[in-house]
Image (cartoon, rainbow, N blue to C red; front, side, top):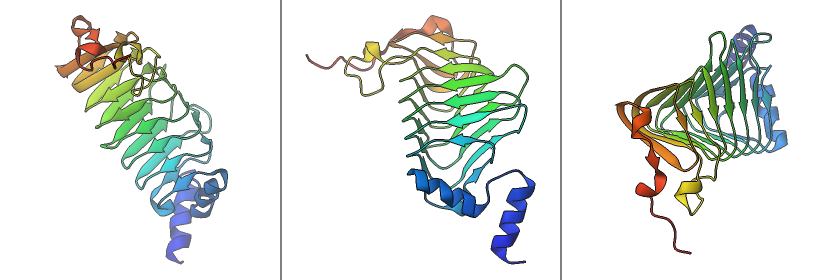
Length: 207
C-alpha cells in the first residue's frame, strides 16, 4: 500500500474527504495550501473562496450534528471545528486564527452560529449554545460557553461603538451577552459588570 493509499484509507474510515476530494474543493475557488494536512468531514457543507491553512480540522457527524461554512473565510493553522452533537453554522468572510481557534458543538443542546466578518483569534474556544453575530470578535485565549455577541459592524467600522460585541483578554466567559459597540475585557474571568463601550479603547475616527 502506497503512502497516499494509506492516508486515504484512514480518511475513509473516519468519514473524511479523501485527499483528491479535498483538492476538488479548489474548483469552487477555495485555497488549500496543504491538502494532506487539512481534514474535512464529507458531511460538511463548504462554500467558495475560503482559505485553508495547514492543520485545519472540520468534523461533523452524519446524523447528530451539521456543519456549514459559507464563503470567503480564512482558517489559520490549529483551527478545529466539531459538530458532533449539535449544529454549527458559519457565515462569510470570517477570520479564524491566527493563534488557534476551536468551536465544539459536542454536547446535548449545543448550537453555534457565527455571522459574517468576525475575528476569532489568539486561542479562542467556544462551546454550548453560542451566537457570535456579524462583526463580533473574540481576541485572546478565551473560553466562551453559551455566550451571545450581538451583531454590528466589523473591526473596520470607523465608529467602534457600532461594531459587533467583543470579548478580549483571557479566561472563562459563561452565559454572557455583549451588546453592539461594547466589550468585556477579562483576565481569568469575564463578568457582566465589566461591560464598557469599545470607544474607551479605540477612539472614534474623525468625521
